[in-house]
Image 1 (tube, helix red, strand yellow):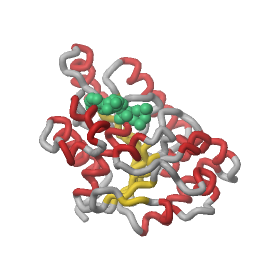
Image 2 (cartoon, helix red, strand yellow):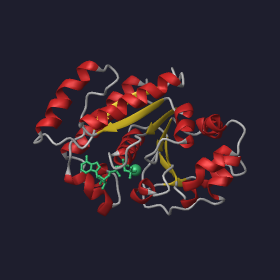
Image 3 (spheres, helix red, strand yellow):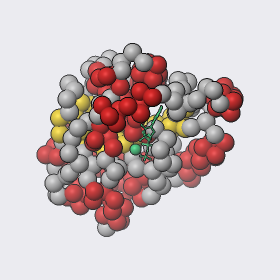
Image 4 (cartoon, helix red, strand yellow):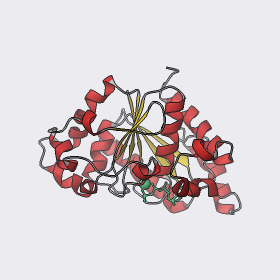
Length: 251
Ligand SMILES: Nc1ncnc2c1ncn2[C@@H]1O[C@H](COP(=O)(O)OP(=O)(O)OP(=O)(O)O)[C@@H](O)[C@H]1O
Ligand SMILES: [Mg+2]
């Protein structure tokens, strides 16, 4: 099982849009896929039309008293399941802190899922916290949406520094450009120049597109209602890149 986390310390950059659309593509490709919506806001849960409620809440999960299998819900799509958000996730940090090895805890909780799933996508809340650290220890790769501005690039550098300091050498950081508006000079400039300086950067930019905004009205991934739009094609090509980098082969 490959564990991917849609992560950025910044809010509103396209983490959930990426998690939902990439999970849909993974499932369509025949991989048994699970999305865990770790954000108490529950946006990914909403897009999949599932109720944001987890029996026993974050406490049951973190303590290991609740088996994950019981809490997982099916979505409308084949091969695609969801572990919903719960409002109690807002205090996941405090719950983790009570455990012996807080940063290793999530990895341990996820282990049994490997029997049932090929790909696990964690949709993370925007923060850098104990939960994020636990995610870094549990994930094979962070998918990091980056809006092409100078400040976003600084944040990205901080993330690379953090990985080095924590000696998370096995964690791949895969940034990609998100919400790219080619009418903006600075967006064009950064998108054209940055990838040359960074080998980790994925090559496919996700354009700013009204179809992605419409996911909220349709309550569905792009593939369900706008499969032929440019943004859907971009996510497809992004998924191919991610799969190639992480050796997620054909099932
Ligand atoms: N490529 C895009 N084009 C246009 N709008 C987008 C795009 N990606 C995301 N959005 C919109 O921007 C808003 C934020 O996107 P999203 O929820 O995916 O970001 P996020 O990083 O998960 O946010 P949060 O930090 O709150 O979890 C949403 O309203 C979404 O519809
Ligand atoms: Mg989100």
